[in-house]
Image 1 (cartoon, rainbow, N blue to C red):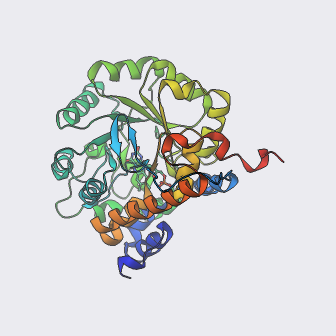
Image 2: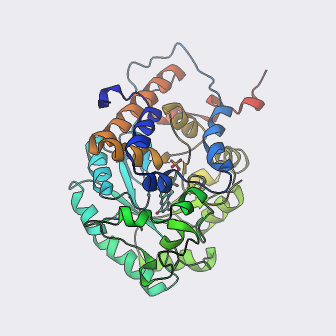
Image 3: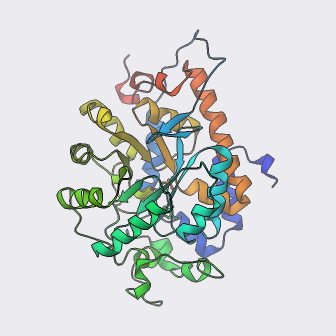
Length: 370
Ligand code: FNR
């Protein structure tokens, strides 16, 4: 269908499901075990409602914000996803046209140089780091991307081993498909930890086979701090306790995330973790920026997360689907849809800027005052 017929992120996903190859769709859409966390990530948003205020002037309404000091037209960024094929450059160009920020995956299928080259002169790119078990190898990667101009390091900590993604394991060699042509494949496992035919953990297993499984707060964060001047965000926080520990190490941000339900099934939905963090440790929000990702499909989802204290939210699959279905215009369309939905929700809620969004505006349904 023409892009004008795409009204929602769900419409976009439906098109992507038709155009993607079976293997690529299996890799993009898969999540672990019985997909409980994957489903709950999205469902958690339906447990929070709005306390909309009326009779407030909202003709002027501004959904823009900053993420680590970098301007973003809406409080949304692209969460890093491996193997977007040539799509990574589409994501970069779409982000440039709409003034949002892309987090580039360690396992991008274009080189970090190619992605940086696709960016506009003033465009900020963030870098998602899978830390190699060899410190020197990891250090080189960090120094390289810093030199290329990436603006922050998002250290992924929820993928020490791959989740059990059966859809993907059943058709594991998505790599054949995606890593064809001139696609460069940034895989630590290139040295051969997983060979074709070894179904093992599927694509995900091959991608992170040489990653550090012994990271700690005491060792890894100071190490990262010592090799880069860039702000550090810890990606994959799943509990209030770990959010507090992250704040104590002095990192600039945390991304509350369970990898889109692709890692530990029955991990708590990010929105619920955010809600508990806000209630139990509001001080953490003064020490660092808090983001969430997973299951975000609507502008109202974005606005709820901001009410509960998130500075911004990430989307993974929706951007992959958009660029698979329509390329750069698809990516632009996703941002336009979200912007319209966010503006509508903010106005109907009585908010004119992101600072107006407060916890009392989006209470958990079961805790609503009578
Ligand atoms: C991911 N994700 C991910 N995360 C990461 O830190 N490094 C990576 O290389 C990838 N790769 C990846 C591939 C694919 C196909 C998906 C769907 C996801 C996780 C990603 O950054 C993000 O946390 C989730 O995608 C957010 O959930 P939604 O928006 O997809 O529901």
